[in-house]
Image (tube, rainbow, N blue to C red; front, side, top):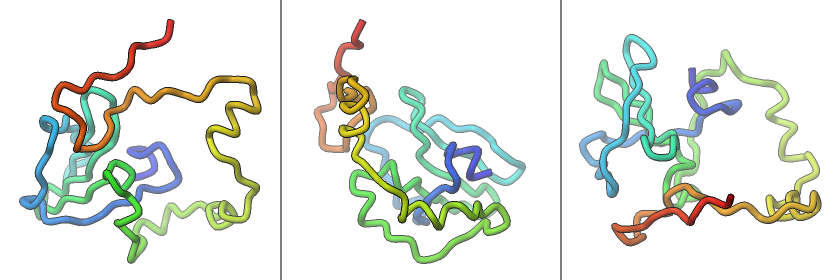
Length: 131
């Protein structure tokens, strides 16, 4: 289920007390993904935000959605039944930055329309869509 929800080989989640979470921009949209859980996401841009366990009230935030994901260092792995063996080879693959990939292909560097971090002005709007 985490692979489907994240669109990736796994989801990196940080467990937090649900009552401790304060949303700085509205409230997340919710999708009932199973009989015991909801997936929360941004209704404006689609960014996955959290996994909510309805049976015990637990909340796990998607680490990639945090202002500083480097601060949420993994301490355990779950869902090993769906482990993709090729994941362990990824760190050894040749790598390039996004900017290098797109400029090598002769394309401009992408402009993100996703909401930036919490400290942006309340009236923040995404840049105009290129036509």
